[in-house]
Amino acid sequence: MRLATVGIGCLTGIAFGLVGCVDAYEPDTLNTANVVVVDGWLTDQAEPQVVTLNRSRAEPYTGRFGTLPITDATADVIIDADQVVGLRQTAPGTYQLPEGFRGEIGRRYQLRVALADGTRYVSSAETMQPVPAIGRVSQRFVPLSIPATNPVRRLPANEFFLNTDDPADQANYYRWDWTVWEKQAWCRSCYQGRYTIYDSQNKLIEDCVTDYSVRNYADYYCRTPCWEMLHSTSLNLFADTFTNGGSIQGRRVAQIPYLHYGSCLVEIRQSSLTLEAYQYFQLVENQTQNVGGIADLPPVAPIGNVRNPANEREAVVGYFAVSSVSRVRYWLNRTATNTGPALANTLFEALNARLPEEDGRVTAVCVPGLNRTPIRPEGWPD
Image 1: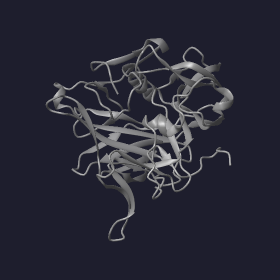
Image 2: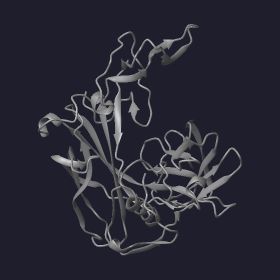
Image 3: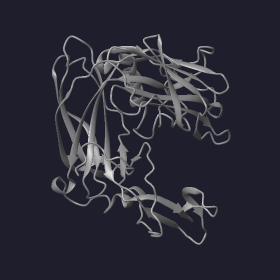
Image 4: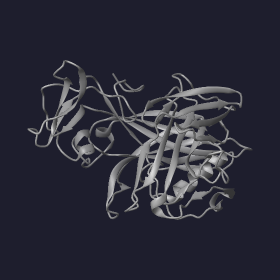
């Protein structure tokens, strides 16, 4: 993400009447930046509870930043200062709590990490706050909605709005996110190669193998049903300082791009935040242009709630947050609501900016991950 220069000091939330301190990291020189980036979000939902650990470094000659996953770390979550639950590494830099684990409102959670070289990090303890239920959700098609790379142009999208009742006599802080499930027909693309199920020794590989007779791409249909998952990339925050106890009406919480003509499933999520988490994400929101993620570290980045207890001067970027979540799923029939041309005819064309070049010899597996799943999402019609 691109962040503006902010010195170390206090963030004053004038618009919301908040005053708090959120530090920002500014290395002495661009080409010496080498920081740990922690991104964790623990919820009370039946879903994978994941923490990612990365190291962001500047290339010594150009100053351009790159990110490397931190592998072979040990991580656990401390609950109410006495119960410890371990995380396991599921992919490079990705650590997950046991299946079925979920947070509980009112309990305190703290992240503890030890790197392979023995360096240790610990977050502040976060208390999971309750969140009100989402009320009415509505959407409308807007032909000129999302700003494009060319600032003069705006892209078509379905804009989603919600109502919710804010609890009275307490400060509440909100974050809204969305996820879209799109049916995916194509599961693998090989550049100058072909998808191979078994190698010459009859070993299962299910991967691309170099073949220079393929001049460009070879694309492969999915072997089983598969869904692409698209996620919101911008922050949408709110503090109830001036609406405490009132109804939040018509809050825009999503702009779903009109990628193609097919229908899709949209999930809107409403999350509770602590004051400290709200202040941190507000600083990130103020510094970004809604591009990239927390691991795309710029020369100056906000310091969150994770620290190295043996070296308080070490800057650690990112935040370990906990949140109760209210969610609503909405079936979006684009052909019934939208007008005018979509960005592409198919999802493949929209995501790859080209037509598929079918090989046709074999099909490819739908590999589950952050952006893809072979499991039919709840709410997808039969």
